[in-house]
Every structure is written in structure tokens, then in C-alpha cells.
Amino acid sequence: MIWSDNDVTNDFTALRKPDGKQEYDPQYLNVAMRLYREYQRRLWDPECVVEKAAYEALPAVEEWHFHTYGPFGIFMVDMRGNRIAPSGVLRDGLPPILSQRQRDAIEEAFQKPDLKCMILAAEIPFVGEPPDVIKEKAEKLPFLKDHWPYSLDELLWVLDLCFSWKSAVPGREVLMLTGDIHVSVDSTISDSKTGQTIRHIVTSPITNEVSGFHPQLVGKLSDRYSYVHKPLAGQRTFCRISLDLSEAKVVADVDLVCIPGEGKEAEPATTTSFKENKYD
Image (cartoon, rainbow, N blue to C red; front, side, top):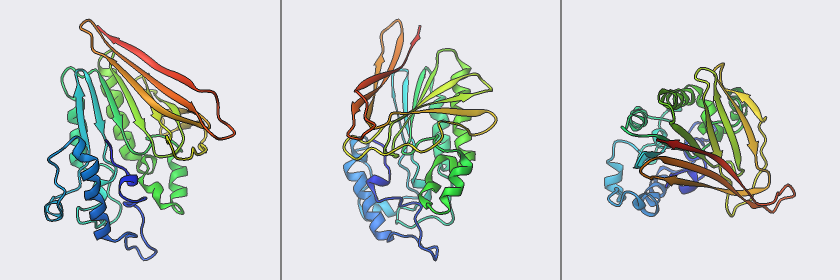
């Protein structure tokens, strides 16, 4: 499980009133964050703190977690915790998406011996619109300050780490898995330095309405990184990841499974295969 504003309240780490005060009452956010822990975090962390006094005594909100299954790793990124205290009070200014402790945890995860495939999951897509477009739109839409391209230096740090690790040993794979924007998109991020690519999957809602996809289909983050988007218009989707841990090889087979939507642009159901990697 990975937390998002849907588990607490919309855009709770970004919204402020015209006078700069936070939009939501801190006590309300404190209760909502603890309820998230009760119904979701306890699924993987049954001993997590949920009682008010103990929760408010925590030094920080830290909701990232990392799991390994043989040579496969899954890192669930926390995009909210560094911008809010356990009390529900927003941190001053606009802190980074990633705390230093979370950066250290991500780096440590990639250093795990025998790791061959890393799934990096985040609430909000790593790539969408170009950074300059996000910055401009965020002046009127504050929630975009929570998006990765708004914090370009952090996004580039993540990509540097992913591509460096992938290119260091032949056969390694990285998959980026996200959601949030209510439309499914199959993107490819390319690195001109290493010549490698990373698949970036955005899944759609299952029951909510499917939205349109507005960004340009081709874009750049820097001279090094570019991307291509392939939106699946009108489709409800989920990502199916099959892992083969046989003795002789490891196979990662990732499918983006599409179910017909209700919109005018809906297409027949289909399954789009990611790739199959074999590690001898």
C-alpha cells in the first residue's frame, strides 16, 4: 500500500489560504493521517503507531517502505510526509518531496545485494508535462507543487540513481509505477548518457471517471533525459506484474491490462506487454 492525498484529504500538503495559512485544520489532518495508518499501513506494519499522543511524539511523518522478493525490490515512495508534521501542521515554505532520510533509504535499497529488478512506485507520475509548464500552471493550481517536475532537481536525482544502477550491470531492470492523474499512460524515459530506457506506467481509476490526457506526447526534462507518452484514451487499466523465480533464471513479465471504458474514445480491451528479462 502507498499513501496519497486520497487517503487523507485532497492536496493536503500544498493547499494554503491567501494569507499563507494552511487550508486544513491541523487536528483534522492529524486524525486523518492516523486513520490512514489504521486501515492501510497496518496491512504491512501491524505495530505502527496510531494513538494520538504517541503519533504526535514522532519526530517526522515517514510513510515510505521497501520490500524484497528474491531478486525483486519494490520501493513505495512517500511524497507527502516531509511537508507535514505528525501534529498536522504544514512545514514552513515548501520543503523537498524527499527528506534526506528517505533519500538515504532509496539509495540503500538500490545497494541491496542480488537485486536485479526494482519497482519504484509513487503516488504521482514522475513524468507528465515539462517542468516549465508545471511551474507556470502551479501559480494558479497549487496542487501541482506536489508534482515531480515542479521539483526538477529531485526528479533528476531519482532518474540519475535509477539509470546509474540499471546500466551498471547487464540485465538489471527498473519499472516506475504511478497513478493519480485518472488516466492510463504508458511512457518511456530515455537517457542519452547511458543509452538506457525505463518504462513508466500510470494506471487509471478502476471505478472513478477516466480523464483526458493533456500533456504533449514528447518532452524533455534536461539535455540528458527525454520521454514519450502513449496515453490509453477512455481505458480503465491495472498493471499486472508476473515474477518467475526459477532456479536457472529470473523472468519479469509486466502487462498493462486495459478494460473498456465508458467514454467516446474507449477502445477494445487489450493487454500491452512490457518485456521479458531473463537473468541467468
